[in-house]
Image (tube, rainbow, N blue to C red; front, side, top):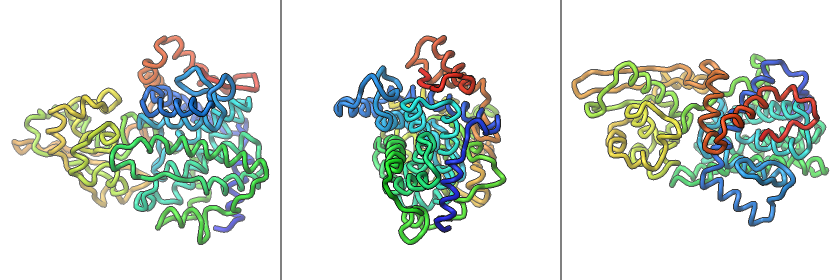
Length: 459
């Protein structure tokens, strides 16, 4: 792909107008915005988020001006607010995800777009256009990168691709030209980072990744607005992003998929508080529990069919995955998720805790969980994240289930009613008054109707 094609991608973002988007796209922005606020507000309570807030205070960056720092009464300059809001949003492992790119677009795009839009006093239409542009770039770059190849090299796709999406969203809010947007993307390429080393010891750095990408995206767009020159084609060529960050990338996927009007329409929500690669098998095991109620004391073996693309995240090495030491470990442990599903019938925040990790029954059942991959599942990846699970009882009975689209997928989506219930459940510890929470929901649902130029803050 040459630099002219890259300019086409930048031109697409620069030309987006919120008022010209189809109703379904604008509704999708509102839908994902409500989900993002839910995970950010609840995530603001985590120790990793508090560390981010302390960073701002130590820098003297907290003030009564700028953009909202969610979960606090404070504000900060937009790029720094985006940093800590991104950390908070990713802490629960419940933010949105997309199949082809195997990454979390909202957690990088929304922190940048919300913070910069609030500081600029942007209109609802401009905010919507920025979000759509950010998702489009993040997801196209993620698909081109090839997530399995990026994982193999030790890069976190959300982090490295997210910097480009945040730059695209920021460029749109700053009303940059196509050429300036292209420069912003080029600059963001030198800020794209994110190591998978967090899997080694349950480190918090995964939560830092989207915050840093959001911060980098705003910075890159502002530098481009000031005339700073970046590479005119950051993605291809000998030193391009795709070659550097993956061994099996496909630059043709940078081009728009004309079968899908906007990439944002392909995004899934996460009903469970763990890696998306665990959701399909958990769905299967929850179905088995509902249908057969297997007695945990008589379960001989649990077999979870996982996608090869996610094995290194949730299944391998299996001995380590059977012995999670903390919540981050548990969020990337298929044995833990399987044990929870069968023992409790749940997989939300209430069971991804240190207390449950130490539960004797959970730890015993994890030792009987094995994971396998098969062409029957992998042949449809990444468009479909299929899964299977089997439970073998000690009397020889076998219970099995399979899922084509895990809960939360666009083909098996949460309704608005389910999304609102999820919002109340997640946000209640932060905003106790149900009326105040409902007011936020109504404001999000009617954000396009706000007549004033500035549509933010929402809280």
